[in-house]
Amino acid sequence: MSTPLISVQNLSKNFGSVEALIDVSFEIPKGSVTAIIGPSGSGKSTVLRCLNSLVIPDQGSVRIGQVVVNFTDGSKPGSRSRAAELRRLGLTTGTVFQGNHLFPNLNVLENITLGPVRVQGKSKAEANALALELLETLGLSDKATQPVANLSGGQQQRVGIARALALQPQVLLFDEPTSALDPELVADVLDAIKTLAASGWTIVLVTHEMRFARKLANQVVFMDQGRIVEAGTAKQVLDSPQSTRAKQFLERILSH
Amino acid sequence: MSSFFDWSLVGQSLVPLAQGMVLGTIPLTIISFSIGLVLALVTALARLSPVAAFRLPAAAYISAIRGTPLLLQLFIIFFGLPSIGIVLDPWPSAIVAFSVNVGAYAAETIRGAIIAVPESQWEAATSIGLTRNQALRFIILPQAAKAAIPSLSNSLISLVKDTSLASVVLVTDLLRKAQEIAAPTYQFFLLYLVAAVYYWIVCELLNFGQRKLEKRVSWKAAA
Image (tube, rainbow over all chains, first blue to last red; front, side, top):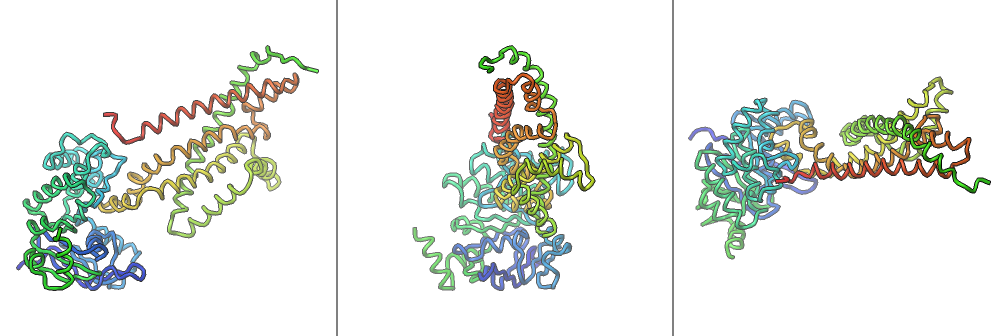
């Protein structure tokens, strides 16, 4: 097997006295879809936020592609070199947030081009062309000049996807991308994710959509109380969980 | 007893009072507010800085200015500073006093507006690779500015009227003009009323401008 795109080793993170992550390790092959599931407060989102540098782990290391950040190497958390490392790590990822978190002061196109222009130094014209192409794929070509407030929740979430894609990251992170949406808009977003998976993107998603995870995910990671309790193929973890905790969780979530 | 108002004086005073407004009150307001806003932005960012060497002086400045009367601040600058060798003319004195005063109040407004921008906006900005300064410039400050408009408009409208204090340090503004015309004729009541109407009109115009501005930055399409 080739080297995995992402390798996370022994991550730990405390928020005050709360142990949010305890010795979390996993690997993710390029081009795969990984679903992270588990009860709320289990550390799912924290894992994602360690990948995109929004959370700085206390221990362990994260490698995405060529970028490695070792959090136990003794370098000061606030130091300039550490900040640069974290920025490089963050830039390997594109994140789609639960509440989309679009920038309300910018229109749809500006939301997408801000990163490419200001971070990658692309020309406005080049960034616009790329953004329009992305909007086209996501079925939003006619919304380019609209303020984001004018879009429906599902459309906003797809703009969020376009914004993440525009920086051409190595991995796409989805943090409960459908949890804040009306049920009828969920399909919109799930379809968009399915298309991305089919075109070869490496995807890590935190989700409560078990049917979606079963259909799409190559591997499923079940977390509880800051630890990875089980990991394996979707079939293994969702259909025949080994741990009592995973069994309980899945029974409860699938029973209705 | 002057029991009759000299109404002709009203007509005669309209143009000189307008001059006091246009050449005194308005430029004094605009210059002081502009400098004050810059001061306020710098102070607000300093207050939010993780570096104590920035944070503490900013906090001390705000505390001192908000804790003392504006008239006293003006007196200290105009009548007090000369005793330590710093002599400022009426106009510079007034501009310094009003800028520094507005700066302190507006700094708190701007700081509050920055804090009110949801943390998730910072996170989204970070997630697309923006540095802290870029996030401030393109995402946070534009949103904070919108939230600060009503409060800053308040400060501006207050300042228009506060500039009348400059008349006591010999700046020829609207109020001083009214006093100059009233003094030899004893028509204080009339002249002060006319001056009041002038202030009111200017503030009403600003009020109108505020509503226009709020509409313009609503971020919802006029589709």
